[in-house]
Amino acid sequence: LELERCRQARRVLAARGCSEERVSVLERELGLWAERHPTRRVRASHAEWRGLLAYRRDRYAEAAEYQAHAASLCVPLGARLSTMLNGASALLEASRFDEVIETASHARDLAAACRHTLYETRAEWLLRAAAYRRADPLAPDMELVEATAFVGARNMEALVGLNEAAVAWRRGELPRARELANHAAQCWSAAGKVWAGLLARSLALASGETPDPDELEDIAQRAWHCPNDDIAGQTIALLRGAGAQQGSHRAELADRLRRAFPSETRSDRREVLSIAEVLDALRAD
Image (cartoon, rainbow, N blue to C red; front, side, top):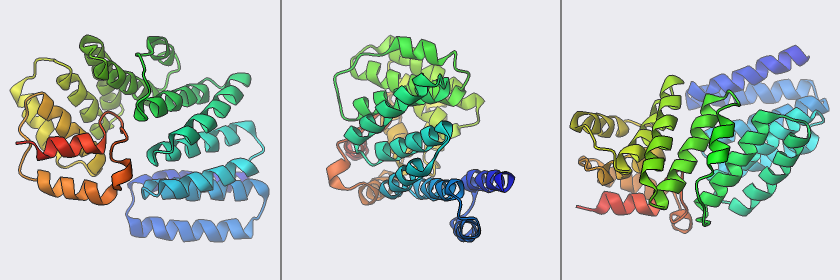
């Protein structure tokens, strides 16, 4: 049973690159399998999987509820930490920052107690990201940046680096912002995470690095093909600060962002910029 549960979990991870039709089929199959094996561990995993699939569909509040339910069922501490942090990540995207800090603080303490370095680092990143997104007064946490480099997780190293680069950029510490953003871009590029890498590189360029006109144009053109409008908008807005032309599709992108983000959350920061800042940049001549 445990081997089959692990197989189903891998199917959920693989679904990140599948069509919505295929994901819907997978969701039904997971439900039928979970009904045949109603153990506590399977019920916890099924709730976690539903949360991951809801997150993939940008249904963040729903994802957070599933992950909280999974955490309440999980007995192994590692599994409980994973679902708690998944839930906190969903809450972060839903702009529910106080809940992120509450959940991530609890997870960080549990991870530290059992010396789970990766989960402790992820919790620290979530705490910093929530504080940045709700515009708390912050200075770059270089100790966290340096410590994360020893964890051995390049994606986490990039996430921490980008967040602290954004903090430095907001404070006008442009050399530090460039250094951190470029390192994040390198980490993501090495891992094949194209769109995240472009966002980080655009922040480095917006932080005063002298742009190569060909690179600027290349990033700007590629950004329009990003499937995530949020990341595309931030990248294009940052490139405008570096001197790039916006392109002819800015009105369509702005309309999609307005439909995706309710007015009450548009002033909340995302990875670097708020949606309101992106929309202002897209409107500018």
